[in-house]
Image (tube, rainbow, N blue to C red; front, side, top):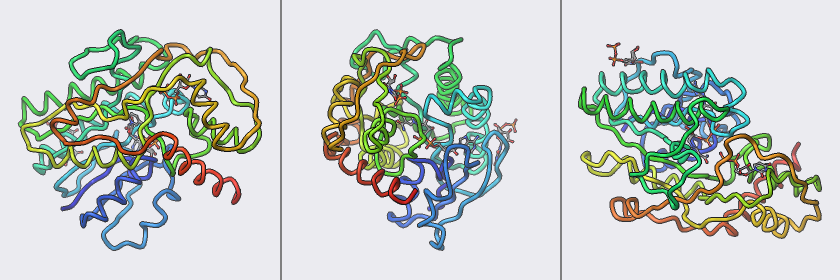
Length: 312
Ligand code: NAD
Ligand code: UDP
Ligand code: UDP
């Protein structure tokens, strides 16, 4: 099939492009390189089944494709808060354009939504039927509300125009291919530990997250795209093993053999206290379950950063 991946030069998008090429598809990446990089897809550029387009999805895109994975959007709080208006435009105008493209071509379209649609949740673990607790006017809102509006658009194009949609709510994902300046917790802690710099714990470190290795995540995403047309989601994709952030810091220090110190910094506004996916639906409907334990996945990610830092 001819597959469009928006955000194809990003962290998850580049892994997804590689997987789709391995599955025998023709892949077109559309990316404006805001947080992604051509280096992420360097190994794919000589592949005759791969094409990389510099394109901002807030503008229309006319191409002929069979499937669309809509992954374009900065995902790290540091990056999505840098230009919040553009973040909302990317989610909302981007969704409209990708849905318009799907409507015209008859392509099936999958939206990379997020656990952030649950905000700072009162329901734990989070199930898909929970409507969430999101601040509509805070510094994270451009991302959270943009992604929520994108979900609304997906379901309205489905109901109104019969577009075939799939919505996955992705929980914190990590792995090789993350950028050292990404700003998210796993890349920050590993880079700090390897450089012997202080480990920056925001708040008291008691907040929790559940971390999924990118190989597991991509597998779940592809299973969702290939699932029967009647199953739209939203479906949670994440690893349900929950960690406190201070425990994550200790684990990374140990795996890196680092003597960096922990230092405490203010907790960012609206930082969710706890997050853990309930993945019953994905297990039942996609026969999907994450396989990579955090410690193994971290070793792999630490190796990636070691190599990267050595060449810088
Ligand atoms: P990333 O920042 O590495 O990748 C995002 C990509 O989108 C980048 O290549 C960037 O250049 C591109 N992009 C941004 N705005 C664009 C625009 N207007 N037009 C075209 N391209 C644009 O982030 P990621 O971690 O790979 O996340 C990918 C997707 O998955 C995002 O939609 C994100 O919201 C979603 N997601 C990720 C996580 C996670 O933990 N990584 C969790 C939940 C949801
Ligand atoms: N669009 C696009 N590629 C296409 C078809 C549509 O980018 O192949 C854009 C189009 O520019 C429009 C948006 O998708 O702004 C929504 O399309 P739709 O057909 O739903 O809306 P309309 O064009 O009727 O406003
Ligand atoms: N965090 C931290 N130190 C850092 C970066 C992040 O303690 O250097 C915390 C952050 O406050 C949050 C958690 O780690 O509680 C996950 O942050 P990240 O930015 O990776 O993702 P998100 O908050 O979007 O889940």
